[in-house]
Length: 332
Image (tube, rainbow, N blue to C red; front, top):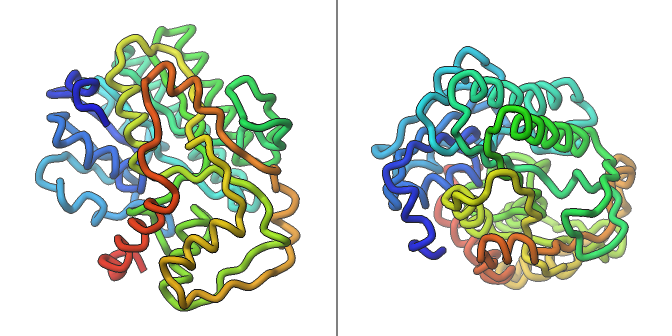
């Protein structure tokens, strides 16, 4: 990350919703040394990504609020005076969205509508950075996927992420609130919750390997994904926050490199040689929302932000394993 592009963040009030999770806490850990004044809002819901340890190194330099974006009265207070809002709070399991659609609706739609309404009433100048997902595209028609790809949502999660995007676009056009939307591929890395498999599959395989358990490949393992390391995600979002020219922009965020599932598992096994790999049938509930191969077209974000991913998949996996080996007791 080029610090010269981020100097405008010094002294600015920043709010990060979902800020104790993997991406939010990584942004916070990068923003504090830049001189930003960081406020974290996180509901710390059981089984979700919030973890106080993620903020341990900067705990004396931030304001931490345990609160929920579904609390409209609270949101009206916390948005006041903020220059940038990283709106990252979310229910992030596409499978849970199918079994608990109303919970997904409350968090991934109404929660963000609360953020927007609070800004409309109290802070229309705040730039909001929203974390959307590749799942808005659903069934993939071509690769690499650019921002003009059709929306073929196959899950409630994707539908609600796309609905939230439309809220943000409306509030920009009607009320002038500046917004930047990132459709993130498959993020992984340190500080992700490791209690269950419904967040990031790569991190989950790291956990299984560290525990000496089998790594299951569904089908032939040919499905291609674009895995992006969390610091690369955070760098792009911080660069967008600092760029005053961005007022209403949508970026696909990945590495532009596709890796099939079998190869990803092999890479995890390379750093943890005792891991055992087995092939399994696709679970019935997973097959329905399988989107097909996905590789990100990063030409737009690279051109507009001057951003490029810095961490290779191999280096990212190695760093992720090293992190959890060191801090296993904080995440298991």
